[in-house]
Image (cartoon, rainbow, N blue to C red):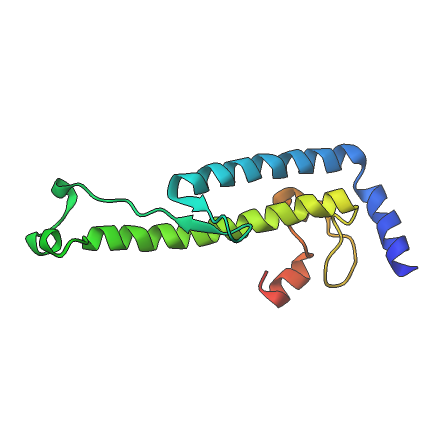
Length: 143
């Protein structure tokens, strides 16, 4: 019964217009994240939601030393691959959060803190529409 009360309270805080606006913001962010990811990675066909970083070959004039040219792999290439992997990991996590928020909207559970089951303040949702917890629990759980 506590959850019913919380959800009814949330409905008052989040009217359909507000939910639609937040959903639109999430969909735009999802599209942007996918666009960014496709520049450095490709979707893993075997693991949903995972992306594999593309390896870019550098041109001979971009390689920094003769040793790198003879060795076949440029230090610049491996540095670039590591940067792209870190960026890809960050974008994948954010995309997961955005997709989870869209799923919560679909399921009718959007805007409820996953820890305490209380409504997430509207100001927090406007600042971060993918938020799954209130500020207190985000800090406690490092979210």
